[in-house]
Amino acid sequence: MTLENKKLGFIGAGKMGSALMQGIIKAGIVQPAQIGASDLYEPGLNALRDELGIRVSTDNIPIIRDSDIIVLAVKPQILGAVLEKLRPEIDSSKLVISIAAGVPLETYEKALPKGCRVIRVMPNIAATVSEAASGIAPGTNASPEDLEIALELFSAVGTAVRTPEHLMDAVTGLSGSGPAFIFPVIEALADGGVYEGLDRKSALTLAAQTVLGAAKMVLETGLHPGELKDMVTSPAGTTIQGVHVLEEAGIRAAFMNAVIRASERSKELGKK
Image (spheres, rainbow, N blue to C red):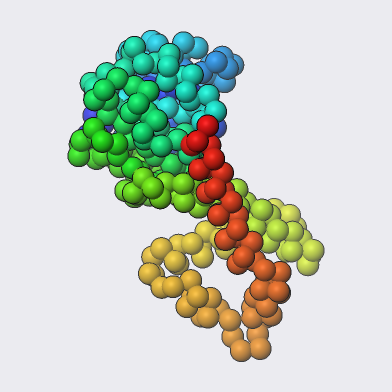
C-alpha cells in the first residue's frame, strides 16, 4: 500500500475536502491519525475532529510541515493567495495534489519552488459515499509512484482515471459538476411518482435506485446506453411514450449544454 505511513494534510475543509476525508477513512486506506486539516472556519474543523478523529488547525503551516502529501481543497478564486503563503513551506519532498477547479498544472509549477511534485485531480462530491468519479493529471515533476498514490487515494473513494491535462476542464464539467445535474433528475422522477399517488419516501427511494441501477447497467454490461434504452422500450408501450416526451423537451441538448457550459466556466476560472 503506497499510502502506508504517509501523512495527509488537507488545506481547506469545506464540502469537497470533508467528503474526501470521510471517504478515505471509510475506505480504510489511511487511519484518522494520518490526516490533518486546516481551515479558517473553526466550528467546522472542530466538528470534523470530533467526527473523524483527525488533527485540525486554523493555521495552514503546521499542517503543511507535518504532512507528506498536501491536498489543496480550496476555491480556485483564493488559490493564488494560498500558494503564495505556502511556497516557503513546500519543497520536492512533498507531493501536492490540487482539486481546485480549472487551475492548470502550470500555475502550481510556477507558484511553487522548482522541482515541486504536483498532481491535478477533479473528483466529485460522491466521494462521501465512496462513489466519486475522478480525473487525474500528473505534473512535470510527478513520478510514477506519485501517480500511483493519487490513483490509490481517489480509487478508494470511487473510480479514478488518468486524464490528459488539456481535458481536465471537460472532466470538471462532466463528472465534477455532474452530480448537481442528476440530483434534480432524481427529484423530478420522484415528483412524478408523487403526482401519480406514491408517498414521497417511496417515490424518492424508487427514483434514486432507478438511477443507480441504470448507471450500474452501463458500467457492468459494457453496452451502449442507447442499446440499453431499447431493451426497455417495448413497441407502443409505456416507456417509449415517456421517452418521446423527454425528446420533445430537448433533454439530450439540455444535458450536453450543461456539461459544455460547466466546462467553459472551468476554463474561465483557470485564467483568473
